[in-house]
Every structure is written in C-alpha cells, then in structure tokens.
Image (tube, rainbow, N blue to C red; front, side):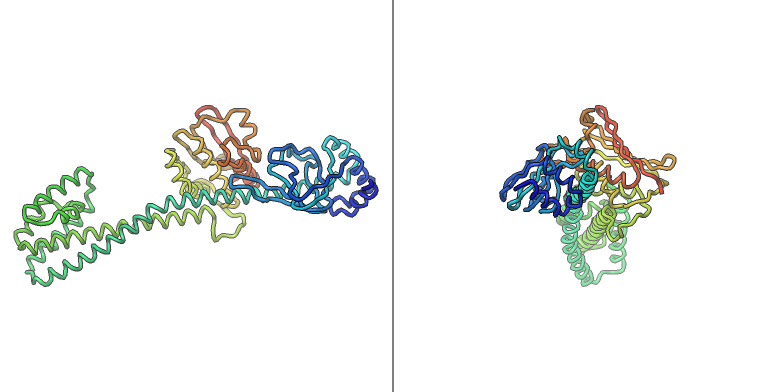
Length: 460
C-alpha cells in the first residue's frame, strides 16, 4: 500500500480522521503497517508498551487476569486507537492483547512522540482525549472487578458467620419439638392421676423455683457437673432415670427442692412431675437459644445491608463512619478470627458524619482492614476521630511493615506484594480513587511492627 493510499485511509478513520492532512502524513511517514492474523498475540501481560496503534481494520482485544482468570476488559475495532498515547503513564501492559480476527494496524514508536507533540497539536489533542476515555473505561472495569472480589469476601464471610447461628436454630428447633411433645405427654399423664391441690401446688412451686434459679445462676461446667451428679444420685436412689438429671441440672434445681415432692408423690407421679418440669425448662431454654441465634442472623443481614447500602439511591448523603466500620467488621470478622488476629474498633459516639456515598466508603474500609488483617501478626486497631473540619480514620496493624521502596508504589494500579492469585494490586488504588472522589486523602506511614493507613475526609 502506498503512503498516499494510507493517508486516505487515515482521513476516513473514525478517530484520527479529523486531524489536518499534513499531520496524517506525519503519522504515515513515522509509522509502519502491521498485519495480524486471527489469534495472533500483540503483547503479553507485563510487556513494555512502546508504540501507538491506529487500528485500520479488524478486531483486537485485551484480557486481564486479576485473580479469577483472564477476562476481556476492552476491545478495539477499525477506527479505534490504542497502545502508548501522549502523556500516558502506562509503561507495561496490564494484560494480554491479541487479534480476534485478521487486522491491520499502523504502529508509531514512542521515540517519535516528542516530535508528534511539538508539531501535530490537533492530532495530539485527539490522542489525549482517547487516553482519558481509555482511563475512564479501565477505571470502570477495575471498580467492577474489585467489587466482585469484595462480593466474594462478603459471601465467604457471610456464609461463615451465618453457619453457626443457622445451625443453632436448626438444632434447637429440632430438640424443642421433642421437648414440647414430652411436656404435653407428661402434663396429660399428670392430669389423669387426679392429684390433690397440695400436690399440684408442690409441683408448681418446684417448677417456679426451677425457672427462677435458672435465670439467676450461671454455673461453670464443673459446678454443673457436680450438681448433675448430685441430682442423678438422688434420682438413682429412687429408681428414676439419669436423663431427668441432665435436664434438671441446667436449671440449678438442687436436691433440697426435690425432697418435698418425693414426700407428696408416689414413684410414678414423681417421675412424671420431674420429667414435666425438666421438659418445660429445657423447652424455654431452647426457645431462648433460637431467639438469640435468630437475632444474630437478623443482625448479620442488617450489617450486610448497611455495608452494601442496599435499598438506597446512589446520591450523596450524610454517612455515619462508625456504622460503616461496624458493618465492615461484620463482614471481615470471620477472616480475622481465622487468622487469630484481634481487631479493635474505637469510634466516639459524637463523631461527625461525612457527606458522600456510603457504599463507596465501605469499599475503602473493607480494602484497608482486609489488607491490615493479612499483614498483621496479632492485632489491628481501627479508630476514628474528628479534627478541625475533617474526620480521620486510622487502620493500624502490627505486621512487619512496608519497605520504603514498596511504599512508594503501594497505590499504583496492579502493584501487589501478595502471592500470585491472592491480590490484584487494585484495592489500594481504588481506595485512593474513592477517597479522592470524596475530597479526601489517604496517607501511609510504616515501620517494622507498625503500619498506619490514614484516611482524612471533610466533615459534612
């Protein structure tokens, strides 16, 4: 293809065609035409990007692996421009790029860019707009990927946190059914025995004493074992079952309370009365366990809704930092316990609110606290305070610290110190972007044994 024909193609190009003809001629004179076959790789992840690519025809794409396998994040067709652009800070490719079909591109080496910027002002302006648009598209893709990773952490943490109370509800509800049936059967049997008012009063007094003592006394395992042994010995001496002793021992009903019943009831009536008292007490205890576990589930759901800001429009509004940090810890609590890391959160009750997007700020907290848990030896401290016209949130861990050479790059996109597959290098970059969108700033100070990330936000 002659240079004149190539200039004509550029004049019809969707992106650069608006540039003056002499600038298109400059592109052709400083570029080289490259033809790609379908499937041909242009560059791999980490390769240096040193050329501008003007796509004349075909279809190109880039796939980025951020820990969950390669995913197509951007594509270009005839009429698009990509590669290294004027004033771009991109040094290496974040992913692997290849031709989806046979394609033609005009490549201009970056060594010519000083001349391009000095001579081709209109073309440079066009390419800068392309760079800004590409940065916005990559940012949306980065945010999407990081939100998916946060959703994964959220799901894992929620599943772990819900498992215990859900299991407790199922276990207690199953036993509650059998205890209620036992209570019903023993009550019917006692009613059929036509007990005297004095006997009914003695049973009611023992039942009331059972519930009162159970609510007032908290027994250690050793004390409960001793009491169960004493009650079991008393029952055994009267030919009654050991299973009654287990139910009665939790109520703290002592042997002295059983003697009056034994003096008023025959053997069969005594067994029915004690089984009824034990079943009633156990049923109440199980109902309380179900209530506690269900309350825990309700609290977790409320925390998740608060963390994600569900059912709320995405508009700026006053945000309570303390509630956001509490909701975040509801998500990350299981991970901290699994790593034997103690996380303390200190937020004054009168902390001023900030104006912003609650869901985005929670994204910041989860990234910073999640990283701190990974880095910590034993302890993470999260605190918030007000100073002048700002609110300051600090996340401090007692890990090994961040080396100075690493600290300078810690907020760079795709930079991570975690093993392959465990980090995308996007968490801190996105946290900083979100804080900047709230007119705040993120700072880091680190030394061996102490690393502090500090977020400063203007108060509402």
